[in-house]
Image 1: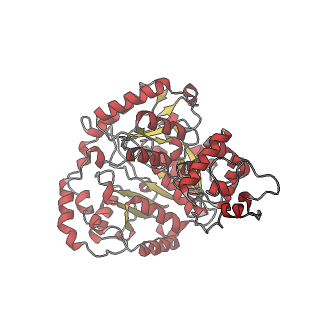
Image 2: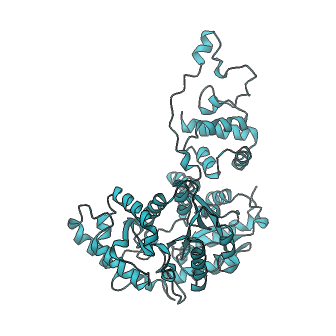
Length: 510
């Protein structure tokens, strides 16, 4: 089965029947078939093949033979077979028909059903299309992913120097939790953040925070366990919960209240299957920073319902406007909390993959869970040892990131520019971010007839060569938001926003 032939015939059949991707997604919903926007986009792009049950569904909706759609027979959209006909003429006794018969289908291998509810559009179908365009020689401005290095943010010289001088000492495995020097530095940082009841044994290093999130969800969740996750979220959280067999239940963050969590909505979604609350603070994709009063309400809710708290704080050192970040674990000494952070963003070294998590608070109630974490940490052996070797250097001494987040600093000035530029575009509005390096603009969908945010992202890519991430990629229910990464210098952002303004000056989604 050729993915290229399948994609070509899928295109052909959709055009012949006058159907769009969204029509097939809606039909799948009505028939109880698990096929979302990201799946059909992958099929149309020729990136992957559907499972047999999905292929049969598509053939039925498109009114074509499944064997032809799979790649058998002649080209051209076939008429649907009459009752009793056999595709390919397999029952014909003529030599010509036998010669044209489709050969027996070979066994194929599909992806796991566990991935049916997994979405990661930060590197999804729109990104695949951008990669195809780049391969054809088109320059794309990538405002879709928080990767500092391509935009001129350099690793501090002292960090590079120290890693180079320790390479020969970091050729072997480290303990599964990490090097003593790295964990000691992280423990001391946790103490500065007032995390309660933390020892060096409560520190785990990881290949970025992403690995540790996956590890934590795998160690915790049984089928049907529910985890409260913000909407919008960083999509890895939802993906890891679903992949581990749990159910991601999204609570709303309120754009009208600085994107703070809606506590009433959070409370309403707690059931007897809820085991934990996830907090992303500072927030990706909104750039929100939660004040102590909001955090205390979440702690009170977790305490009332005996829930764990997972707090993703990877942007805790990228806070602007003289504000201060508070770790929610510092307010919850009687609860069990897991706090995540790392160096990818604050030290502009995303490629080094340096992340960590800290267990704090009432560890007695999580003894069995911690054994599961240790088991999985041992199974992956250890995280990147050369990267661990520079944690102590990075967390000590002068913090160069502080130069970026004050007036006159790159991140601060770029934040100021993008906020003003976006709000000056008719039909767009945005809440001013307080931290990180993202802004999450709202689109007046009625003004532009936008009903499919993935199509909007593709149209912007094709027409202006700008790559953004649609709001749906962050598990936001409506097609009315998108995320911009404002890491590029102001002159690049100025060109980008001018193109975006021009795009919205004429755009009307068909």
